[in-house]
Every structure is written in C-alpha cells, then in structure tokens.
Image 1 (spheres, rainbow, N blue to C red):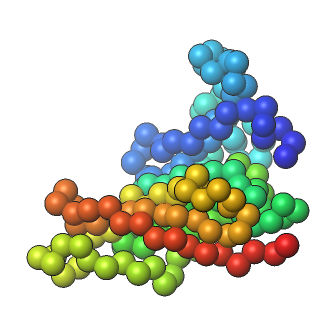
Image 2: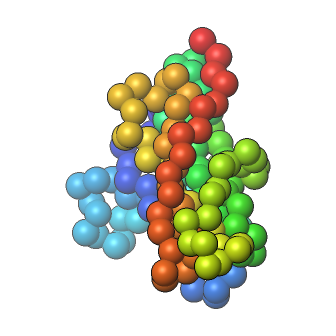
Length: 167
C-alpha cells in the first residue's frame, strides 16, 4: 500500500460552505504538530493549507475507509459511503486507488428504505455511513450501512449491501 500506512489521513469540509472535502495527512507520531501536516493540492502534497484542493465536492456526510472488499489484488483500496449536499435522500458509493482519489462515485440503487415514521409519507434520508467492522471478513463484499430518516423525530436504519467481488 505504499505510503498509506505511514500517515493518518484527515478529511474535512472547506470553510466556504460549498461542501467540498479536502485532505491532509500527517505521520502518526506528529499529529500534535501542525507544521508537520501536508495537504493535497490536486497533484501533489504541500506543506501549505492554502494549496488544498478538493478530493470530493458537494458531499454532506460520509466516511472513507481503507478496504480489501474489492479483492486482495484489486487496485481499488479505498471506499466511500455518504450522501451529497443536494438533500436528495440518496446514498453514494465510491472507490479510489489512493486516499486522495480520483474517486469513482455512484448512487446506491436498490436500498430498501422503508419509512419508520408513518406520519411522514416521504421521510428525508441523510447521514449515510458505512460500518466495515460489522462483518468479520469484508472480502466477501458485504458492507453494512446506516442512515437517518425523518429529521429529529426519525430513526436510524441499517442495511446489508452485497457487492460482487472478484477472487
């Protein structure tokens, strides 16, 4: 995996409210030293935060995680589950070869999103998150995701996604 194990990767929204996500990295033993952080500039790592360029755009919530769910020999080493900032109640799934991308992101179709709140005929769904720890061996393509629905009076739902994998 190259340099990936030598760093902690930190993703965060830009302060301009565009819901663009930027990326920083730091060696684990230097996490308390801001001057040791590097920022993805779109083509290389820079010591200046002002050089940061988005790795994802218009993403409201989600999580990126390192995985071998695409197969041990697959070049796809990172996955993303989340939702965009358009409030369309749709989960997004992405994959990338490196923590900085580029990201191949698609809508997750076929979720069985049943309304838990009968008083709301079209509950808003948001806060889609993966739980790769929920299955002992993720190489079989199983991934549990959860999401919230119905605003502050809603609940949290979970579903098992099963991706086709190659040996």
